[in-house]
Length: 193
Image (tube, rainbow, N blue to C red; front, side, top):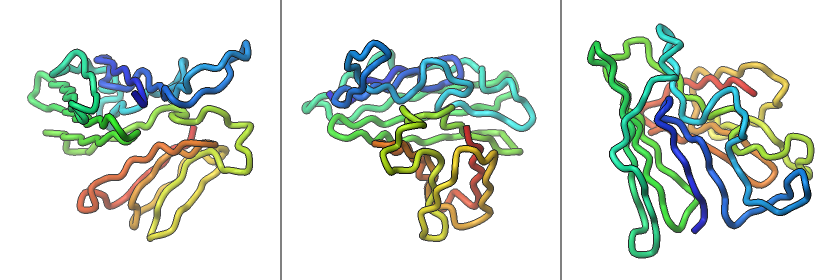
């Protein structure tokens, strides 16, 4: 048991991602498993927004399974979330979880959206402590043209037109990264915060 993930049908998002083997003291000083998704967040991880319809991120998603339990006999499992609009457009999010890794593989299928979509990583997903980074850098991080690029949290938006290999958020101990298929990405926009 490395982690516990709770998904929400409201927006097809990650509601909770708890690391069971890593702890940090809560406000009362009691050690608690680290929670990568803040309890209060302006944006939820895996939310999708559309340029032509900002309310789409609140769309209801249907799940193909209710509960997924992984162990050494069942080392991987997939959850499929689908949102379908009356006009035939749909978004499907496939998440593959691994029993022995913190990695989750995410595939997004968007059908009928001419203007593209924006995938949100959530407000401060994986950042548990902005103040105490112990020499590390907290904030957005990317691989651009073969170089790791760290941006500071006080910047508003960073745009890369070419060369984006992956992008994510870095914390004192953890990194949350999206790694698009190499043939499917030609630019990345990273809003901070």
